[in-house]
Length: 233
Image 1 (cartoon, rainbow, N blue to C red):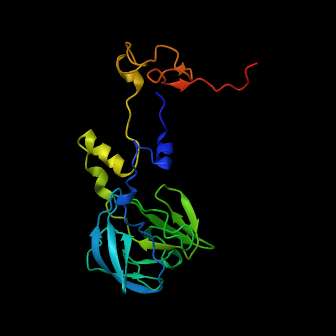
Image 2: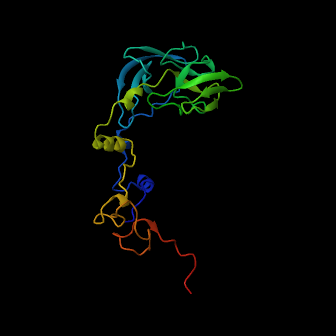
Image 3: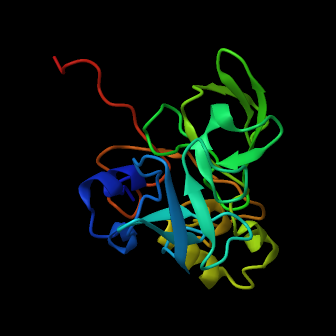
């Protein structure tokens, strides 16, 4: 039967779809600060995000950042071009030596970080020229401005894929936390009592799969008939 697409449900707040945005508490982007030293206060979990989040104290202000692998509570980090090239320190990519792995890289100076933010990922500084060349996790090369900020290190949480889900219910809740559509069973795989496409000795529709626009809901499956292009005479 005809239903609203998942993209339409996201945009309209459809009753059968609920986005878990109210559970999110940070974008984990680079703050707009001058040269500053920070202290890691805590490492927390944000629903829907696999990578852990670190709470950082910069002077009197607190900010959240994506935690690098090996970060510890109480560790001192730096923000700015004068910091050392160590995991957790944030600085412009133009000040980072070639061959260093970085994450949460800005696309344009000041946007807070767009690239290499997923758990277990990182990009590599390849060369410095008119722009800084990065080897992205996808294997492609990306040119960014020297002033774009990035954090040295590898995003923590990379071993999450090694743990099996064990049952489909856990994967259902994992998809719900990220506002993704869960898997659906094909109609041709069902029995005839459950779906108009079901039954048969092997998976096949068995009849014409296009249905008219005035078909009742129980039969409105498959492809809808094309809309009339001409007026009736």
